[in-house]
Image (cartoon, rainbow, N blue to C red):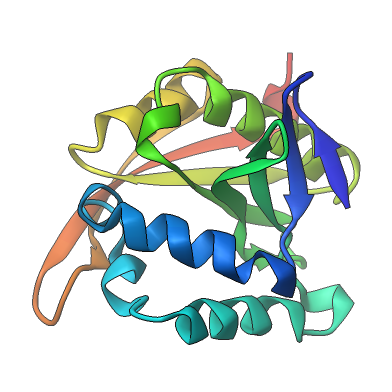
Length: 179
């Protein structure tokens, strides 16, 4: 599946063939990505990325999460997708990351907007949330730009390492919030 974001940006559903692109991107930008993304420390070899992709793609279709590569003019530049989808209550969370050199161009903001349209129109979800580590300014700007509602802080919401936790800002958008 593909979702066109702009003339140069496309979201393509992640598959096994994306493993090398994803791993190479993480491996080249460990310090940058690892500051806010705990999985970077555990992604040490290509097989780790292949196992992640398999954990998503080897699930029954009615339970599968939609995760997309972000591509600019066909070049891999990041990932975006749903996680922890609750189909009974029609809600999900969007997570994303982008290579450093593509930051500040509105790419993720546009991609999140496209994913929200997909979630509300095609997946018939009612609620989408985004969680950002407190202090991750680039990430928190995205839900604010898209008029998500700030709900508060999830204390110690994400584990980094053995005994280190980060607080998360929680934002939500409801189907009824759409303009």
